[in-house]
Image 1 (tube, rainbow, N blue to C red):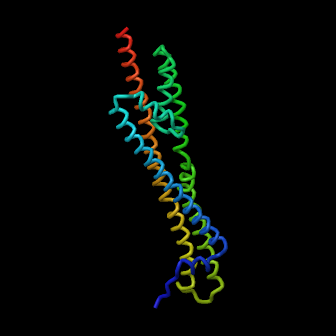
Image 2: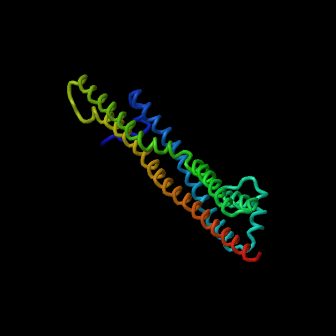
Image 3: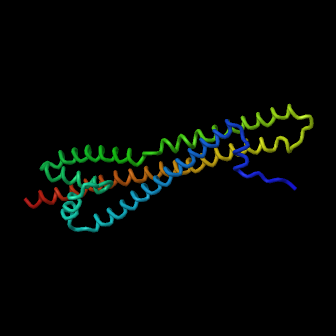
Length: 223
């Protein structure tokens, strides 16, 4: 009857180098999962805020009311911050051409800063996805070397003699993939989602400028 080796048995029976590799991979995997959850929560909330704000904004007939409500808040982010800054520039500049130029510059800075905030943690996920398989491979190579070096001390070779060493080596590979695959999936999803969010910010800015331009034309026609 074959004896089954648990992960704890493999860890305790592994060499110091392989144990160190396993610990590093566990730390990387645990930390990356924290970033994965944080990115999913942050980006999902950002997309939800975009939908809610655009629905409320474009269905509203009183832009000034929305501006006054948002202007009293200190934690505006995303479209609400873009709108507040844009509307402030529109109100304090009588010449629409100058207002448009200032709005474009201001919103460009805001969007770039928000993109930086949304991208926080992505470099870590990218690093984990790239490095983890190689760390696991290093542990695999080291474990295989230990397994075969132990054969020189045996007079009779059998699969049972090398099975534990090969097992710990393969576990190192598995842990490397366990850390890398979720990090890679989350990184690709986050990059795509951030791109969608930034495009939504840029599209809203363009639509807002068109609205201001139409309002400016209407005001001139009244005079």
